[in-house]
Image (cartoon, rainbow, N blue to C red; front, side, top):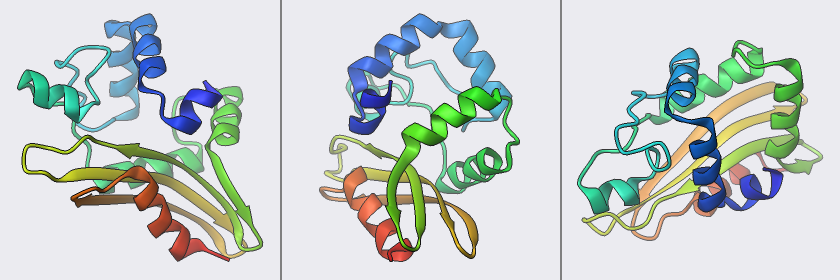
Length: 159
């Protein structure tokens, strides 16, 4: 899972989602209040805009502010996950350590949409000397990627 997380390995996520199954996935999306909780695109694709575009079905949607609020809940320990699961998640989310603090996050990218635009996400939190900040950076432009969104965040929280 650690490797899949670091490189955003969609096939690994798809396989994991199939193992989790519809009922359990929907239960957890509801428990944590994740976006519009719409999995109608399919258990192994509901979060993938490129699959939605191919099939003409909308993917699950979540706004940047909803993503940031979820990170606030994660940092506050206000999500229904075990302490062990939260510790593992924190470990695999660690993206960078600098003199200013620790950056935790996850990138996400889409293939170009019908209008030629792409989505680049970076969602996470930063622990620094002055506190902890949750964030969600969403880029919507030609060629946007999760790496681009991460670069924006790194400029804000840089050393």
